[in-house]
Length: 282
Image (tube, rainbow, N blue to C red):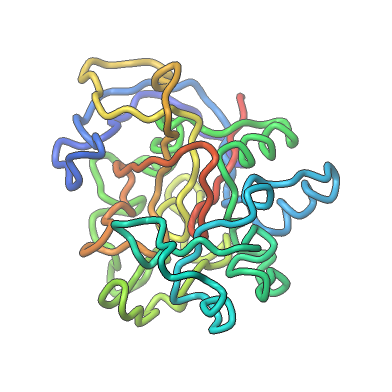
């Protein structure tokens, strides 16, 4: 983990790109010092957790999870009833029976060559269980965003305002026309190893792109502009906040691979681009 000493920073933005997500306004937030994982939790680490506790993820209990269709084998595609495109506004997500953290693209896939990639197909409840097992917790949205910014103020990305400064890729996101063609100029069609690319100013890797990351907070979109201290979101809700975007993000679709960007899922949701990292009290 990296120790972040806390202090006051500007959370959110006064130039929101996705209004409905509640990215605004920019506001002063003060945080106590805390620890945050340097990397997203990897398959290898989650595997040790499962072996030690016999934990069964919610995707395994439900029997299916959402996978990005172009990543499926022909065999897996043939098994799926195409009428069951459960995400009406995103038909490229298919519910795959037998998909799980161990089988990210269905029963005929595995993680043998991806142990250093972020674990995916983990729900908020699964992530919380892992963090508790190692003596930590999920970061609040404010803590996550503070870590993402790496000491910079009012910047789009953890390193500045240019996605590829001097032509250098700093995150695993989509290049090309979504969802038809990913040119993989950043070298990856799906997840990248958790230690890929350069860290930000706080020494944190892959804070945007690669996989969405769960936070502790319940979702809400109306933020008060007044300064706040150690905010934790509402006391209850239906969805949890996720941050950072994923390998499927680009400016034309889901431009959420930005520090101020945010989205939501129900706590029992899982998908092939959704993972987490843990935090801990100082």
